[in-house]
Image (cartoon, rainbow, N blue to C red; front, side, top):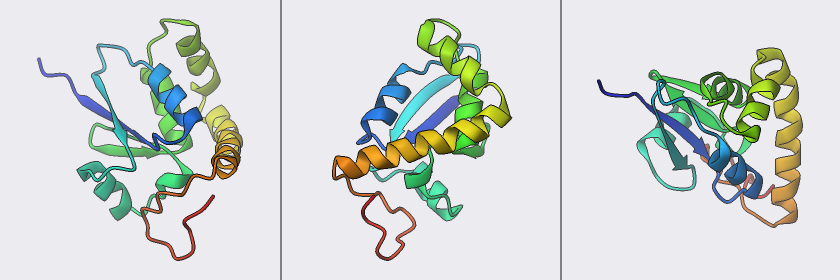
Amino acid sequence: MIKEQILLVYDRECPACNAYCQMVNIRASVGDLCIVNARENSAVMEEITSQGLDIDQGMVVKMGGQLYYGADAIHALALIGSRFGVLNRLNYWMFKSKAASSVLYPMLKFCRNLLLKLLGKTKINNLNTEFNDKF
């Protein structure tokens, strides 16, 4: 039986995002998690851009041919996530509810954007929006 490949696309230059994405595990029965750096060219980044999703404003999970963006992505990860380890259990309890994910994700995104601004990081700007290169 071939396991589904689940793609997790995020900005690897963000220390907070990188720590989260390296920590998250999914259940083996669900599929294989493949982490994709949004700063590198890839077919999935082309798909994300063609759908009009701003990768600077949310991570993406591609599963079952569908793209989950932002709060929906973190919610999907919680539902398919392993419950092994304290951080994975915490992730599940924080984001298993779609409503909680919708409330918590914007706050986390604000903190992420502030962190990247303080670190002087540039945006990916996958949508090629004019004057949108800095946080």
